[in-house]
Amino acid sequence: MDELLAELTALESELHHPGRAFARPRLERLLHPEFHEVGRSGRRYAREVVIDFLASAAARPAVVASGHRLQPLADGWALLHYRSEEVAADGVRLNPALRCSLWARTGEGWQLYYHQGTPEAG
Image (cartoon, rainbow, N blue to C red; front, side, top):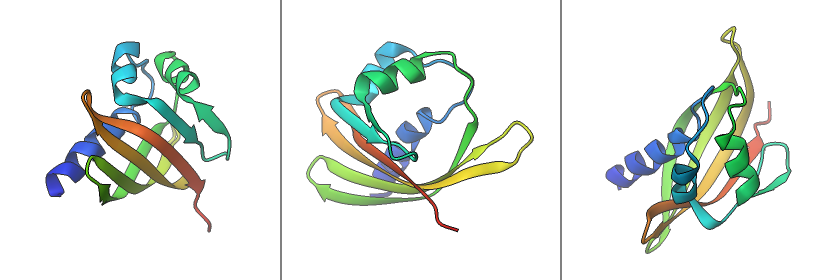
């Protein structure tokens, strides 16, 4: 299970790199065809909206993720839990959130099926 945790954490962290556009083909392989997200804001986002956003060159704050935990659900399904914060240019950490990502193992490898962020109380 440690290997799977490391693999899914690495895949998840690909989506956290700030200041660069992602290659659309990589995003299309990483995000399941039925991917959808409920963001920290509570808004729902469809796969194409997320791909368009991540493929743009829009500046985004860095993301620091920690406390990754893996919960296997069924053969080929795993739930990754973690905490995130955005890091402003001056180093101030903002917008702490508790996050979970549902990953599915497909013929393409592990693909992100669902993601949700919830503001951390406090």
